[in-house]
Length: 382
Ligand SMILES: Cc1cc2nc3c(=O)[nH]c(=O)nc-3n(C[C@H](O)[C@H](O)[C@H](O)COP(=O)(O)OP(=O)(O)OC[C@H]3O[C@@H](n4cnc5c(N)ncnc54)[C@H](O)[C@@H]3O)c2cc1C
Image (cartoon, rainbow, N blue to C red):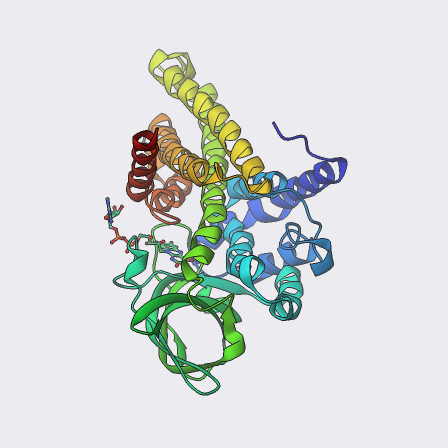
C-alpha cells in the first residue's frame, strides 16, 4: 500500500476534522434541500481541500492521487454530493492540464484550485451517453473562432460553473473531429437548463446546457482540433477512480452503521448481530471494503506512474467499488429492517447515493464489454 508522507497524514487528519465537525452535521440537510451547498464550497476552498491535488505552482499542495482519493472517500462517508464539489473541480480542469496551453493553464488553473472559479465537464448528450462517438454538437470554423450548436445533458456542477469544458465535432475535409472547448458562462448563445430532480447525489446540481450559435474564440480550443477522444479518456480514467472512491466511502459508512445497529437492535431477546444471517452480511461487507481499498490504491499508483495498465485497472476498480457500494448499502438497509427504509437513519440516503455509481463515468456494462474485448484481442495476439 502507498505510504502517505507526513504532510499527507496531516492533510488527512485535517479532512477528517472538517468531515466530522462541518460536513457530517449538515449532510442530510444538503440532501433534503437539494440545493448547491455554497457554504461548504467556501469551506472546501478555504481549507485547501479543493486545491490539494493541483501542483504547488498553481496554488495546490501537490499531494499524491492516493492521498486525494482517500480524502474523497472520507468526505463521501458524510456526503457524496459534497465530495462531488471537489471531484468536479478536478474533472473540469483535467482536460486543461492534459492538453491545454501554458497560457490557458496559467489563466484558469490557479482560480479553479482556489475555488474562485467553478468548472464542469460536459460530454454527455441526449443521444450520446455510452456512445460517445455519437456526439452531435457541432463547432463550425469562422474567421476568428468557432460557432457552436447543440446541447449537453447531466453536466454536474453546470448550474454553478463559471467555465465549461465541452466537446463538439469540428468537420474538416469531410471528417468529424471531436474537439474540446472552454466556454465562459457569459458566452452569447449559452443557456443553462434547470437542475435535474435526482434520486441521489442531491445538491450536486446536474443540468442540461444549450448552445445556440454560441461564438467562442480560437483560443477556446483545448489541445488541437481532433484531440477530443484522447482528452475524454484521459479525464475519465481519473473520473472512474473518483467514482470508486465515492463507492468505498459509502460502503465504509454503511458498514459502520450496520455494525453499530447489529450490536444494539434486540430481537428474540438478543442483539441481531448474534444471528448468523446478519453476521454473514457484515463479513461480506468487510471483505469487499478491504479488497476495494487494495484495488484503488494500486490503480492510483499506476495513474501516478502513467502506466498503460491503468486502462484496465481504472475500469476494474470502478466496477468493483460501484457494485460493492450498491450491495453494501442495500444490505445495510436489510440489517436495519423497516427503520433502514426511513429517512431518520442515514443508510437510506447512502443507498440512493450509491445507485448512480454503476451508471456515470462509464456504465458497468460498457466497462465490462471493453475489458473483455481488450482481453480477447490480447489473447488473439499471443
Ligand atoms: C447524476 C449524474 C451525473 C452525471 N454527471 C455527468 C457529467 O458531469 N458530465 C457528463 O458528461 N455526463 C454526466 N452524466 C452522464 C452519464 O455519464 C451518463 O448518464 C452515462 O454515460 C450513461 O449514458 P446514458 O444515460 O445516455 O445511458 P445509455 O448510454 O442510453 O445506456 C442505457 C443502458 O444501455 C446500456 N448500454 C449502452 N450501450 C451499450 C453497449 N454497447 N453494450 C452494453 N450495454 C450498453 C448501458 O450500460 C445502460 O445500462 C451524469 C449522469 C448522472 C445521472
